[in-house]
Image (cartoon, rainbow, N blue to C red; front, top):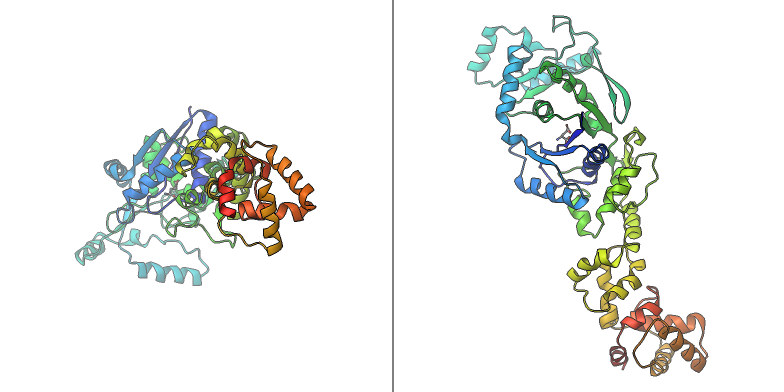
Length: 456
Ligand code: GLU
């Protein structure tokens, strides 16, 4: 059977590096198996879902190098969920509950005080038709729960019922259906929680592997039961560890923490994001892969650790630097042009400066120095005089890679300065900085007239 996976974000905010981890795990899993990747928007919550976020997610995935084979919106598939609801009702596996949040909370506390697991006690099943009708008459709207198969015929006498699966990431897993409440599938206002639409779509779309964060492990127990209740075979499941901030807080789509769009704006390369999103929290060494093929070679879901992985943005910058340092001119040329870096010297410019950049954007900084000079520089008087002497010795153009060496040898011979005393003021005069790209490479990119005019 060919592999089909899905990434199912809710379009309620910008996706972050933790969501990218889920998307990439699915993408690389499918890619390695020659399978199919579905982007399925979990947008049944009309109030919080936004088309603009869905579009942003599509473009974020594209930027990361993920091109879905199919895009689906759950909000367009309600009639399918309604059919599943009918089927479950017919089997007596979906039941209405009129309990208010306050009632539920009160009962939960009582159960806890009696040292019972704080699960729903199926009180709704004890209500008579008349009692329910009276509540309806009061204007109460029911929510609907899925009756978990954790009993031998009497739902009011649940018993330990282990659901087991061999997790693609975590190995053998087991969840006791008696340790959880019957999940609410439909809210009081008639909207669906993600549980049922997700299972219905996984069945209809032929999803073979559900790969998602380990915050869904318990849901999986209930969802496997739901697959069976809908007469379908459950797919395989894989639950990867989640990413947290360095201080251990969860990443949130709503607060926009470390969003993919934000990282892109900061000049972070997609492969830096992808490499870290996939390799962090695994036994693989974190290094910057240059493309998806290389990353796929390092991707092994089984190597993920069980505990959450702390995501440190500094690591992202380190990976970014190594990608930028190795970036070829042909790869970067259109981006330099977009930054206004144009002309016959840009290839030489790129190779001169790339080793000093953390992001491609920073090329603009060195381009301004090369083409316009550093602006006011702060040098002590004796260095100023030295610079005047040195500039008088600047050889005529054309300049090449030897010009710097020849020039500074001449300056050294004439002034007696050497080492730091010779090179540091020259570097500051030409670039305004104490450190930077090799001046043998930078000088030929500069313009003699311009340098002399600025220093006059
Ligand atoms: N929208 C859910 C989430 O992002 C989907 C979970 C799933 O993949 O089944 O957590």
